[in-house]
Every structure is written in C-alpha cells, then in structure tokens.
Amino acid sequence: MSRPAVHVIGEALIDVVVRADGVERVRPGGSPANVAVGLARLGVPADLLCRIGADAYGDLLRAHLEQAGVGLPDSGSPAPARTSTAVATLGADGSASYRFDIDWDPGTIAVPTARILHTGSLATVLEPGATAVANALSAADPATLVSVDPNVRPTVGVPQVEVRSRTERLAGRAHLLKMSDEDLDWLYPGAAPEEVAARMHELGVRLFVVTLGAQGCFLSTSEWSCRIPAEAATLVDTIGAGDAFMSGLLYAVIADDGDQTVRTGVLQREQVENWAHTAQRSAALTLGRDGAEPPLLAELHARELVSQSAGEAVNSRRPSSRPVRPEGSSLTGAEL
Image (cartoon, rainbow, N blue to C red; front, side, top):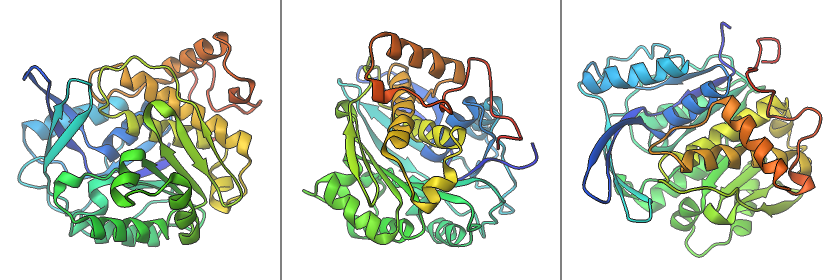
C-alpha cells in the first residue's frame, strides 16, 4: 500500500532499562515509536516521522521499526549527532521512572494523507519540534482523525503549567485524546476524570479516554461517560503498556471503520466500549512482558477468545463488525 493508514509523529529513542536488581538492558522505545510498532504488529499500515542518529543505537532502532513493518519517511532535516535515550529505572513493583537525553528538531513537518494522525509525549512539549507538531495537526486534512496521547514525562523538565497549556492547545485540534491516571493527576491535581473530560470536550475533543491501571479505564463523550473494568494481567513491568493500549485502541477504531465516527462525535457507548476492551487486552499482554512489546494480531485474537471463554460480560463482546479479525488476517488496502 502506498499510503499509511496511520501517520505517527514523535520520538523514537533507546530505553536503557535499569531493573530493581541493578541489571541494565537496552531496548528500542519512545511512546510514538511504540504506538507505530503496535499498529504495524496488528496489521495496520503505519509510518513514523522521527529523528534517529547515525550511530549504533540508531541502527538498533531502525532494525526494530523495520522488522515490525513501520515506514520511516524522510523528514528532510539533518540526522541528529546521536540517537535520543531514556533511562528507565524499574521499582520493585514493576513501575518505571524516566530521565531523558533527547533531540527533537524535525523541521517543517509535511503530513501525508492518512486515516489517522497520531502524536504525543515528548514530541508535543520539547522545542523546536513541539511547535512543528502543533502546526502539523492544524494542517491535517479535515477528513483525518487526529489522535493525541500526552504521556506526560515530568522529569524532562518542562514546567507543569506549560505542559498543561500545550496539551490544551493540542486538545483543540484533536478528536481523540487519551491520558493515563498519572497524566491526569499531574496536569490537573485533585480533579476527577469527569471534570477533566468536561474541559476536554469544551476544547473540542470527541472521545476522551483515561487509563486507570488495575481499575480499568474511563470513557467519555459529550453525551455520556462510563468506566469499564481492567483485563486480568500478570505484571512484569509497565513499560509500553499505555502505548499498547493506544495502538490497540486505534487499531480497533480502524478495524471497525470508526475513524469518521470519532471525528464527527456521533459515538454509541457499546461500540466505544468494544474498542476499549480491545485496547485493554493489548495493554494486558504487554504488561506481562519484559519491556515495550505490543502484541501481534494473532495474540490479541487468542486473548479475546480466552476472555470470552472465561465468561466475560456480554457487553464486552464484539458486534458483527468486530475489531479483532480472525487469526492470521490483516487489514487490506480496500479496508484502509
């Protein structure tokens, strides 16, 4: 296929993972890169506009992205002197804290035609690239669904008030916006998801999602809101789980031909809950793995079968146009 179904803009970097016992491991990462990989593994044509250095870490990143099937369009800007890194330190409970060394200067961003344009994390707050990202979202085709995941990183050093201001400006351009409960707590201390949802909808967001860890997730449109329980998961670490939720959600939207439904804001609760269950299964599979390893389509399908056979609630099951396709299938050019 000559064009991507999803065009992702943002950082690709190397995670230096320091386990609780002090052992270090080097892994490809970066929230936007993880989302692009997750989509590609689920059979969705995706590309990633990022910056990768001409060094050993850059070689590792390129191999990882290309193996997953992620397209890497030429940004037209010179490659950085070195590939960006994030040191992720794992606690005894598997949670991760980060510190970053990142270069984000993509130059002027030309946005190709795609069904979905997605961005988030450091790319939306670090200059000079953050302004270029905001301009790209403003220039997106009106028929393109714009998706944003702030994936806030307090340790990067950008003040909270500035991050919140930038997030709200992006919300004014986004149809779909997803936060974690940690994002919400840092950006809007003491506010409930329902309160932040009202603000997001006021800014123009059609579908607002908050992941709540073991408590599931919160879904909101201007007409209704609800919470759905989490999928059971064996926790190895949390790295990449939120990104796997995001890629699973975007996959489910596209597979259900829901991108224009989200863009127009006419959203039925059962349909959105189905998408969210797919996203939570994607995240649960990633939680049980070491590092950011989103699932393949066959793994997601198998997880759905396990959930249904265990007696999952009727309203979590798919309609006839269900997002999870039969094992081994992928999205065709005609569908995209």
